Length: 446
Ligand SMILES: Nc1ncnc2c1ncn2[C@@H]1O[C@H](COP(=O)(O)OP(=O)(O)OP(=O)(O)O)[C@@H](O)[C@H]1O
Ligand SMILES: [Mg+2]
Image (tube, rainbow, N blue to C red; front, side, top):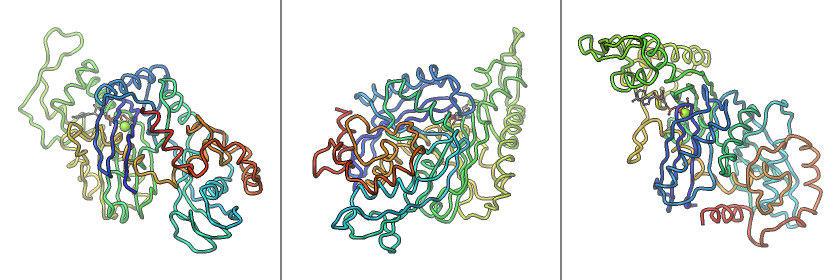
């Protein structure tokens, strides 16, 4: 099915909040609005002040609205991979209709059945990613609707995260006045969007070097196999420069961007630049090699930390090597430094969209692509987070922070044995859930 429609991605980063509005026409993505506002309220990738974050979100979205010439109401939001966990899950139900033709409702019910498991009280389900369906023992089905069967099974991957993080992201977006259409796990979207098929299948390591955190992900067999977050990033480099050169944070940031290099061998010992030193009226000359040594020290620490974990996973012989992106990956010399440390092939990923050829935008573009690639099956499975029963009602098409783990077992049992859900249906007969959600969604852009 060709992708069509408008999608807005929101990446709430430590350094900046990025927004992209993309219009898809017959699978073709056109970016029609962009926003990028300085971020306040986050530390090391995590929201620590909701009100300040709300303000940054509003500013970034206002910019994107102005450029796109439309009002944004709904967004797909990136979630950091901090303390992310996932596991395989599966569920089985008896097909409900007398005709035994599998419907949207059966897909909904089998997804609910797959989610029946105990989850620690401080964690919540972020998403259930369906992998395959089995109808009466026949495996490998992507969309069982319309098929005839008695027994429907689904296997998938269930992602959970800390309630605090998920809640704060959701709360900040809603308080800013926007509706969360979906929470998207950032490294998952990034890996899906920027790695080519072969890299996803045969294996690749992905680094997102942000301002406040560095995320390492491993993709293999077309699945996210591993992710880890190190709460250090480009802002730590800037702080190091500020401390070592005794200059303000802002001037350290400017030095990093204008003269920085991660590979001292490539930095000049002769070329020098003026630095405004705190407490001195005259600026001091510092050479590029010295600045580069400061930058390298922090980046080396970050990359060596990742190396230690990746070595234990034994993934350095994956054919895709390493792909690096994120704002801090813009620094010249990063490829050479990473190649020296890991001794594998390293590539820098820079988005290829006009006006966005900067790795700070990799994540937000990935969010939009991820959203646009969601299938009808994803929509149905995702709707289990809206309601515990298959009964879309007006205004509840938000994937809110529902305590779905409570009473789930009991509810799944009830769904499979009850017909009373029809009473609460408000969508037209003949209009399926997916169409209903899409219609609701497009109404919001009218
Ligand atoms: N040209 C450049 N050279 C060096 N560093 C850069 C350059 N451009 C951006 N950066 C750095 O990239 C970082 C911001 O990257 P990014 O926007 O990906 O982070 P974020 O998404 O806001 O934060 P996080 O993902 O860690 O929460 C900042 O530390 C910034 O200094
Ligand atoms: Mg980021």
